[in-house]
Length: 394
Image (cartoon, rainbow, N blue to C red; front, side, top):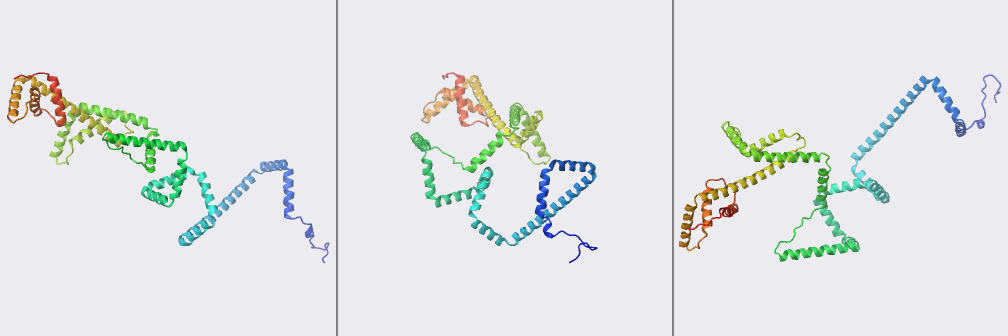
């Protein structure tokens, strides 16, 4: 045994006398807990005296932490890449593992699904509705197949629904009202009431379109611009339509002489009118092509109604003027017509009616009647007889 006091000897404590790491850590915790204020003050003093060194240490620590995070991210990325390659290389084994895990953990899968559904109920329902709307025929097929497989379940659901007295009574009243309406229409000789069955997908699409329309913040200004444009466009066409049509006809003839492709006169008129009205408006930035097309359709209908009214009025005025200026001649012609009718074995017609008919035949050859129908001619004859108010005696 070496002498502890000889030269070169190293004094060591016996191993049993060294404190363990747990004891050292416990002592340190106790010291820190008992001297928090003193430690905080010492740290503050050291930081104030060694600010550059503290910043250097902090930078080194941040660099080491960033390097550690980078290494860990690379390790995770390599792991994900390996897993992805394995899944691509072994799709069957991956599918088998997933199926086996699901079969062995039914309760966990159900718990995970219920937990996710509770947290994301609206999102799940929206995705399901979008999936059903994307393939309505497939959805109908699945619904029919489920109804065939679960007839008892379906009947039970219906019984449970009708077990509510209010629901049952409302269904009875609705069915009775439908039968009464059907009998009433049948007795009146009318066809039965036609109902358009709307699917849930169609209702959701209608709701989305309605929300997009009514919740658009620019809708009031959009409606104002459309209303002003449509009214101004109709007013312009009613006031200047004839003159613009003359210009359009001349323009179309010029294009034909130059060998250019032909254009419809009506298209030229309405295109130029749209340009003029849009230039006069203060704002048209929210108007779309559909808005302009709708305004053009409305104006065309109004122009047709105005032209129809004008032609009918010109026809009535022409008949009345002709009868007043040529009453004797028309009366003679009416008597000749009655004699011809009697010769053919037909009954005599009232002289007033024959006079108006003969006058109308002459006026129709001189005035424009392209928008009038046979019913319009009959109406014009009745109006003319009321305005004339004469009794012819020949």
